[in-house]
Length: 479
Image 1 (cartoon, rainbow, N blue to C red):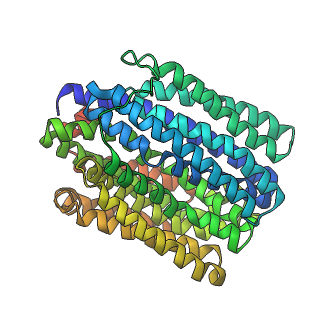
Image 2 (cartoon, helix red, strand yellow):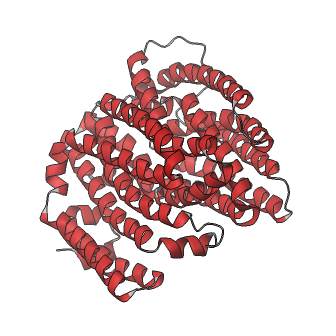
Image 3 (cartoon, helix red, strand yellow):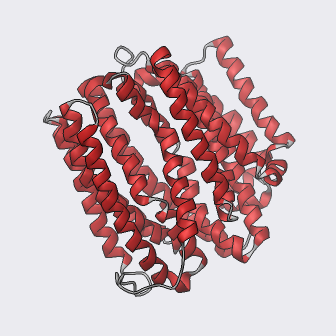
């Protein structure tokens, strides 16, 4: 791998980690306070409203962000033209989606508190969507440091203000107001930084010659349904069961979201790089794709095991077992979901960068339909645990399809002795835990020392290790 590409990946990995970490850790802390001090019912009302707003944000974004990132990465000389075309459409979608959310608030049958929260989150929708689009422009130029700064200002202000409000035990409506205000701050700084790139201006009155009609439809449909299939169960639980059940379910979901920070970071870093390499150097594109699979596989297995084995300890430490006992079994099921999400992410990104996005789109549309029908049937019969198993099946279907259409990568990475070695070590850890009832701390130490050491040493090539590790650590693992 050439030095400029390796350096870009390293630099952007750090910035992407900081961006995603500040956002997710802020959300996790805020939601943890809500769950711990406001109880499952109010927590359920807030997370339901936040999830609904996020779903509508995905309608407003409609894949414009991913398309902007990939197109700017490929055709930097046309960056202003690309931005102008997509931003005009983006503003139209934001306007229409806001009206849709207001209509949803009027017709849906939920508590009055949830309706107030949903109304406030309309502002959150507008500025989050604009902010997402501007950050996508930074990614297209592989300038993730600007996104990091925007994320820091937005989330730091949110954490401070919400912390004060929760300490004062103010009504949960004020927390929603602060969520919206933090996105306004983020948009302000994004506009400030975007003007620093290549004499950028916001002139959207010109008529670009570039046409994205087909790409927008494919990217937009995938963008929406890819989020909905993984989050629609929260809305269905609120409508078919109650808001307390939402709180119990979302308590687990927030933990999983924290773990999925890793594939999100990999996506942020690799998507523009892989898009560029697919045009410039196909062999290097394959090499980076293979390395990405290995990274996510070796990290995903221990995180999955920790959730499965120590679900009761995790729930007790974070939320308290008395109010969230039902969340334990849900976390065990989602432990398997974590592994599937880590496995499917690189295959999905490879499909995107080799212009096979339509496969991803058709797959998530099918899975979303399956998810909704299955929840409507089994959720009233078996409760919230049914949604967890349905999510597991949905992610397995997606992984199977993505692997089928990336069979050449599967052969090179998954079907190898070293991969099976990783699973054998993981199985060994499970057996030891069951026989000797090792506690959470010792389990974590075992995973780090045994699994990661041997996994990294025997799973990666010297060239990959040189890219991923600092020089002194690289010498310990060099074959």
